[in-house]
Image 1 (spheres, rainbow, N blue to C red):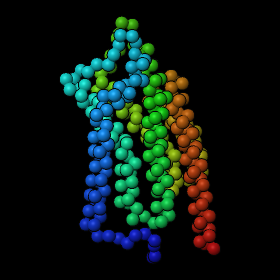
Image 2: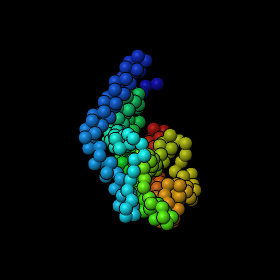
Image 3: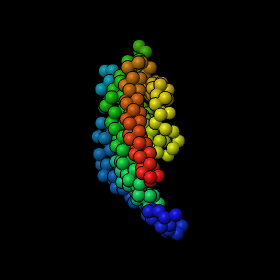
Image 4: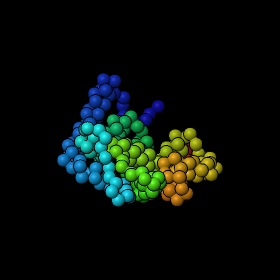
Amino acid sequence: MATDATPQQPLMAHLLELRTRLLRAVAAVLVAMLALLPFAKPLYSTLARPLMERLPEGASMIATGVAAPFLAPFKFAMMLAVFLAMPFVAYQAWAFAAPGLYRREQALAVPILVSSVVLFYLGMVFAYFAIFPIVFGFFASAAPAGVLVMTDVTSYLDFVLTLFFAFGLAFEVPVVVVLLVLLGFVSTASLRRARPYVIVGAFVVGMLLTPPDVFSQTILAVPVWVLFELGLIVARVLEKNAVRGESVKAE
């Protein structure tokens, strides 16, 4: 059967190519980290701003570990380097897999890869500017009388990194929808029928990731729902194009 994919290569050639791509990805992360390390402290101060602006007067962040004042900014600079190098890392993964794909698959993979990275960034930005002020304002106001809120720098970093990942992944909903349809696991019709469950699931995710009030849950659930609808529209267009292409071939 004739195909337009690249001819198969020996296993050793694949392994050497994989090693080269991995080394380039690691090098990109290291370069980004070296560039960020001199600014590790101001970068951490920027990260801590949503909390610091909502702490009561007289409260501050603390470091309970001896090395925490150094390790927390260093760890954040390292993770930020990974985030910044993500487009290059994703390109290396794409360059390794692309020769084994058909031209149609390559044409679909590029926009999916780009949109995945962009949506992940948007999820992190949304978390920092929209969710963090609500979450930390709620936690600061929920402290009982006589309790001084003083958050550990390492615990704060772990918490916000978890939220960054959670919201970055939550914003991948359109990509997941499109991939499920393209791979044939579901159809857009079945996804439309499942819309009520998706909406409920979005509010459940909002309940788990935000303070226990309706406004906070809604501010996450609504974007996830909108992104689901966006993914459904794109998947429907691709589904129609695929059906049209099969009809042309049949004729």
